[in-house]
Amino acid sequence: MKNKKMKIARIENDLSQEQLAEKVGVTRQTILMIEAGNYNPSLNLCIAICKALNKTLNDLFWEE
Image (cartoon, rainbow, N blue to C red; front, side, top):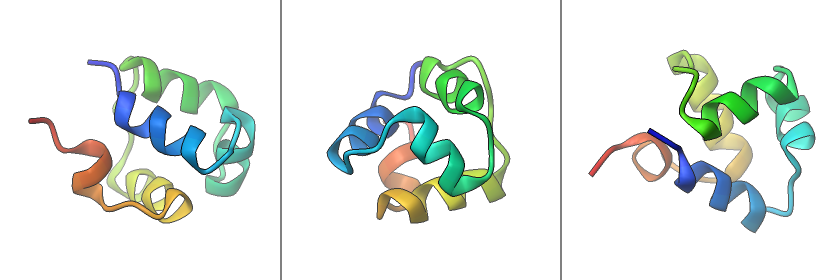
């Protein structure tokens, strides 16, 4: 399942995939794969992404 919420939050924060990746210590490809729904990030990575985007885990990773 694509993570559109994460992509929207990243764009709202005016960050490229590369910039977000740098902030959380992963590669751009990892961010791309998470947004595409092809990678299941660890809890630690989810938390780092949420902090970088000023969102909660529920905001970005909870399926409705």
